[in-house]
Length: 445
Image 1 (cartoon, rainbow, N blue to C red):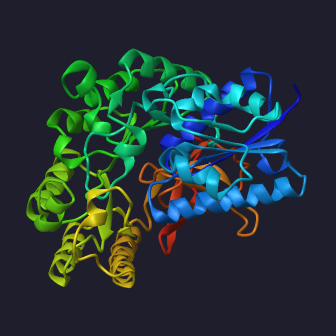
Image 2: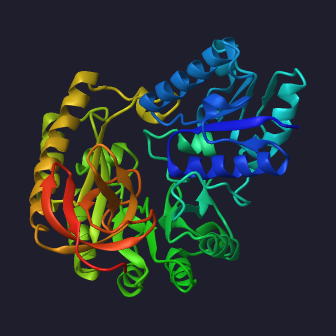
């Protein structure tokens, strides 16, 4: 069956991993996988449905490919992922051009769903969320030297603003040996950087083994041949243990980088979010982490305009950002999500206030980031080459301080021809907003 399959995968890296497994299943069934979905016979839109902007992006993509179908350029359009799972009753009704709308539990059946579509059937199927495959072969859609390693699915944290537990279900850890087998396979196929992800990486193992096992997993990953960098995202502050920090400090392959989504600093707002702590306790913890792992890069995400957030709460959050001087920070205006406890809370903050407050936080973070970047001028750093910018006529890449797709870049020039995935030493010469500018200063590492 010479049917060309393309995919648009939206949202988080965890969704990307799901998409990569679906592509592999389609290829194994005899379909041809192509990189440009506009040239495909069937397009799978692997949607995100987390917040309003993500939902809008998903719908725009569906409508774009529905228009290409109407023009006769593609034949079938399938919606999968979080938006399809969350709005199962509405999506097909609102967008009848779709040939299939399927929940995340149907990911493992994607090849059969494609066949059914081409047999003239309109498919709507929503198996139990636990049917979502958590392991299997993948067709990597990232750069060839980097891969996301999903260690768990679902979430038990029940933050009051978040729809993920309703979309993805309860927290489910993957067995450790299964994860290690996948990591070995990825390393054997040339992957040098593993990015460990889950809704909450620090909860890993509690459901399977009765205790947190992220530290042990990272230690075992570090012992695998072929890997150079291992990075951890989505670590919840209350589950960052001394053992975890020790492993991050002592294992050379684990980059000194930790992503900790804190969301706020006001005790009152954190409690309303169904999260823990307050600004003072979180500041003390950030100081402890920096002391335990010298030179660690701390990244966080924050939410402004949560229901009931006063000017005093926002001032406390702003001061928290100034005091803690995070190396990387993203701030988002609160998104009111149907079905979440926060959506029905009183004192909803006006949208323009939410956005203005987020802009204030990001302006402050740009100032902090610029100061930290300027301290790096004259220093040397190791960078992995990600590509060549033809317009700027220079290479670009990332150091250990930057996660793929979400953090900043290093732009640099050099006399030698460099390859994507090559590691080089760069002398930092200047700063351009969030990014660094430099020149190659040594041989290949």
